[in-house]
Picture 1 (cartoon, rainbow, N blue to C red):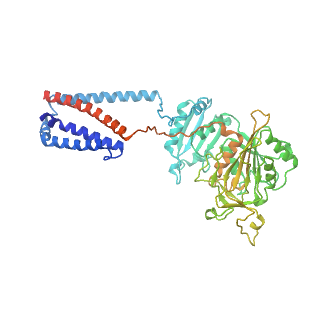
Picture 2: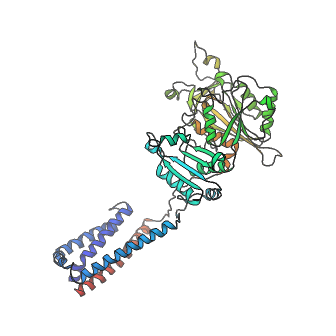
Picture 3: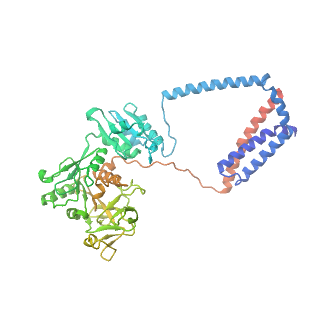
Length: 531
């Protein structure tokens, strides 16, 4: 009995420690009887030790610094120094032989195999420069995650890849020299000198970075043609109604948007990655219409934009009908959006349909449209073509077909009636169709009932820029170049009964506790014998 009382301090410390540890693991100190028992017994044994042996233990403490115990202490200090030296040597070895292991099931802390293969295949220097916008008011980027991701790219090809993070506040000159515009977060430059390719991204994710690298390694930028000569918004104009912002945004994606006077060339150039027809105010020549239809039907990529506000919808409506897409002679009004935008004719897209174009759009930053017409497509597949109504207006919206009344200065009020199209109303449609007898050729057409969202005064609003880049990338086929799904930590769970859980918990505690107490008892007996 006396031996148990003298050893009770160790028993109490072990039981109390395991009780606290178990409570932290389970999340409660009272939910499991075993944990409660551990805590109670631990306290009881500690009290017993304090009453019977505590004072005696304190009186012996004065002899620790002398005799055999002191020698044990000196040896322990020597072992600590040796162990620390080994740690230093190990760290030096690891630093010189960098290796990474990702033990997560989903590979959360690694690049995908696709990204690794692309990165390892680089033959020229790739420079990555990220902006630390977290230090700027309103910045939402996480510099720690950005650095970790960029380090992964460098790790797989340190010979050609370098990266750095810069603070726009302390180094505005460098930011300006990189041509970074509002919203840009990452600058990429592949190659050296005049032959280098440059891209700028608004987000830093594996999907976006790898896709940008792949575009740069393909060499010359893709060409996208913009039909001109019919009163379309001007490409080079920096006025509110111009398209210079779109030109710059596509340049960041390694895509060149250039004007095309179709009557001069007679056909769409062979190097066209796609064509945009943006709300022409004057009629196209029949030869121009035929050239656009012939180009699209033979596997071309076409973006058609209407604008009922300025009468720029007739040609779009006519061409869209060739692809079984109907652009309404109407204007979408949304009473709900009026609370935020100041007018029912200006609204945000409230619903997204599943599609590559809409998959990355943020619900917090939806695209904004103004004076848009409805765009309706056949349901599902029709004649081998797959149609998707990409975005829709709000639940309380409608497409007003009495446009004259809407623009009447003396009235100007409109309300939903039997002739109107009740919301939600489709704003844009994507069509995809394999070319018969054309092998792998695929026709892709996107139609929107609005052009204003692409103009200089609107492209930077909400999610407009993201939508524009998604549309162009899907039309050109860049969306299929790299498909990297999101990686998330996945919980591994196994369902079992409460009784089974209690048995597992008990065995998890009792086994280690018994071994620890046995080891302590043997050590304690030897110390007592020596003393």
